[in-house]
Image (cartoon, helix red, strand yellow):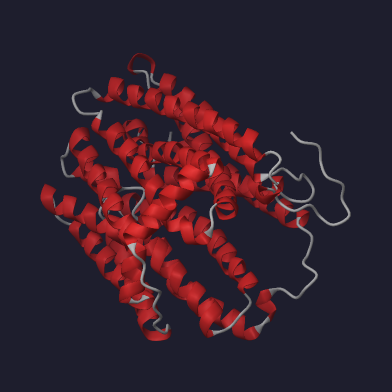
Length: 453
């Protein structure tokens, strides 16, 4: 497994680089000057990324060794599962109110609050007390909600309202952030592995290493960013509007179903990959980097697939991602059989699952932006988040009372069933939107319409 992890990482990085270059060549250059040619915009963009990227790096550093840390402290799998459930329950609790909290407290203040709460979460990892670790998971849920709400809200407001840059330039910044997010994710696995294993500092080292990055993110926000606030939102009204949109629009209902099923499986995978592979001695940080490199391959494949050269639609890529996810879980249902375990096959299946994530998230993001009006998006997201987290919690709690092998195999079999339901929902979505021009990428000028697939 040691050689397999390093080989997979090197090959996947090479493939990701090749696909990224091919994807960039397949997209024609814009006729207008790129946003980065504007010195004021480039300076503003760099100021945002100086605070945002360290926050993302700190988040990724904590991924490879979380399960291993709890195991190092002597907790068994069922106890660790409950700690993960605490994090998911925290997401259910804080997710719906995060946007309202950020708007009321202030976006810059919320970014600083994120750096404080996530630093406190990291410090709890130094304790071996179960309740302290559970409290850390709750803080982690709050911090994650702030990370994916406060920074983006601050940037969009400053971009449009304060600096008066064109709204069409907003995606340029988040496209850069997404690229560097993938790079940071791969690098975080290598750094975590170096701290925990090469330097022999143990599984708590990556969490301690995250704290300076969080302090840096908070300091940049506090020193360089201006404060801004959002309009007050009534949570009940937002949820009611989201529910009405789910009921009234079948496209939104099917997208929400796919999201809840697919992403709940990913949450369960985040818990299970370590106990499946760790007994066979791989470097966990390098394995994590390999997963992130596989996700990079998927993201580059998405950009190549929807480019003018190939002209696939996002709904087609979404179908492919769910199909690949189903196949990977089908493999895992057999490779984790206690009587004939195959760690190499499980590793390949995990890489395929991560590749499907790289395809899934940009495709789902495009379809959600087009199908769900912006005013209804928070409410719809809140409703989708509830079954998503409940399914993940249920899957982990089912590990209670089961030995590792049979329990793990049963969970992967159940996940295979969830992904099959997601596949059926995608088929339903495809039949609904295949003639819906609103959910299709525009064709390049002068090119005839492609036949329906």
